[in-house]
Image (cartoon, rainbow, N blue to C red; front, side, top):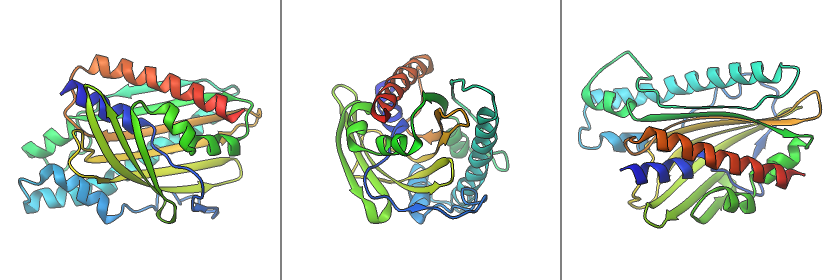
Length: 263
């Protein structure tokens, strides 16, 4: 189980796409908060409870996704506002394993579902680069191939803002999933939000829920920064110390490639 968990996490941290995105430029401070999950997101989470299919699990899935969305958006907005308000940019990383995310109801499968979440929150200073170039690099296939270990393929559906990624690492297994992203461009930021909405075939490491917010900011100093917050539920988590170190290792490598590509 440890190896499957590592594959799921390393493939999930960096998943974006390239080329012709549909980008919103509306001036709405509630844009991120008002995004709704597509039916497919509910369907993928429901697969965890497929053996039960009770009214209790159905109601839980229907409440969990919007509740988590509000929680994640509030956390991301507060964190980014605090970090960009500082006089100088300071990188940080928070990798943790929250074991309880909601408290309204309790039953065995619900508690098991929430007990195996991973949270990754990172903030990285990129130096004096332009956020348009950072965004272009982050969303490029060439960057993805460098940043994601074992990447086999990326399939883009630009009309739907969807990216499907297939990853295989010898000895660990495979993951094949899709995310759909919403993107907002403001005067000094790109805000990218995504949900996992499909597991293709029968992958070794299915993703039942994954919500990610990425914020690229042009700071007053002329530097750029990138913030990412991800909550995800895939395989059961074990050997958490190993997972923590592997995530830090991949994150450092991904940021290095991002800075190099953005110059």
